[in-house]
Length: 120
Image (tube, rainbow, N blue to C red):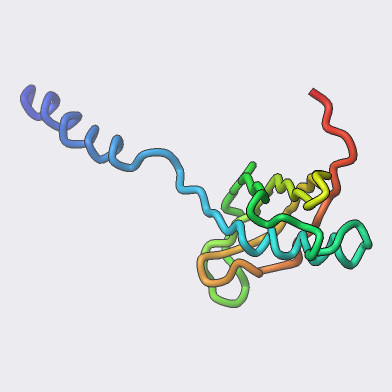
């Protein structure tokens, strides 16, 4: 019985360690493309003015919020910080919020917030 108490934790610990941190869902292309379209529609910039090679997309948050109504798969709320660089050198920074899943990145609209000033 005493040996069982010593061995059981040794059998469980590797499974816990292998599980690692919680899985983060990531779907950057959809949010980035929708942000460009939103900025164009708002008259903020035009895709032709952007240097796409300098675009920076950073996942700030990914949280499982339930199951989607269509596919019954996990649904995630994603928040990105995206910085676009115009060929003129001007930078446009946005924050996007959207819902996505493993079947489709477009499980809802992408809300785009333009950052007018970043305070440190």
